[in-house]
Length: 343
Image (cartoon, rainbow, N blue to C red; front, side, top):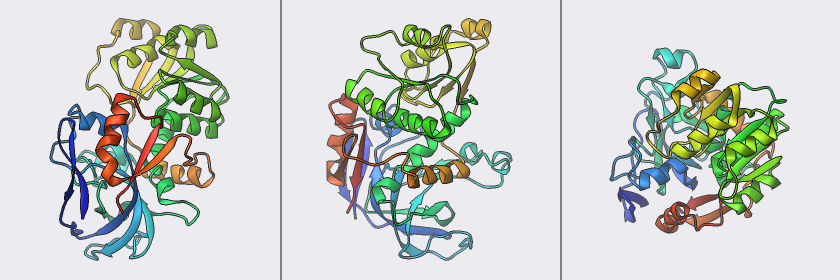
């Protein structure tokens, strides 16, 4: 099979690889669509501690089950040969103290398909059967590949713990930021500001319902946030993950407000701890999603809260993978999201 293999910092090549064999309780999926995630961009640059080369990345995917290994197969899995599925790439143990609380995303022994094991930037990928969800006929494979990032964003919005009548600022209008916007709109938020340095991404955000679009290349994000709501916005989601944006988030929120970090661009950032203490600002991280979040994201896609249209998303063959990574890193792509098709 053809596979896009990351071999080191800014090095990626299309290789012919053996078709993987599913282990007990796993299925083999022929990949229909797979998205490029922001965390994979940092991995491609060699900045992500989870990913070690050589590696087939790719965790936002949907496809068709073509083989089932019945050993230890779970009766509650919908995965059967010929069934169209999307899969949750977070592999959890199901028995630790975190899993017992329904927090599979922070399982003590969590593994991620496409990071700790081969992912979906290939024609075939193996996945535990219990992580598969049936993809409705009304959703394309491309739509199915959006379930995973939308689930991340839905959880981030939930983690704000804010009532929909509160003001929300989203820093970053890339895919995760846009999906946070969609999730917030679906939750009933009416005043949603979003910032980015790309005017085209801000224009997409306006179409998606942002009430305020802040061009961070021209405006001070924190100052503008204080003009939106005197004293600062009620809650902020940083969907970028740079020191600059993490600092913007803290300065933009109201005293006693809440900041949610979901962006993973930079490994470490110094924070103004005394300012956080004196302003009683709550800062929390969010990683991935629970099974319930994944199911909710699928529902939002069925309800067309997010639609894979060509004004913000581009679809390309797997062979265009490396140039697509470079475009996204260099900021030369006019699209917020790029989806690859291995077939």
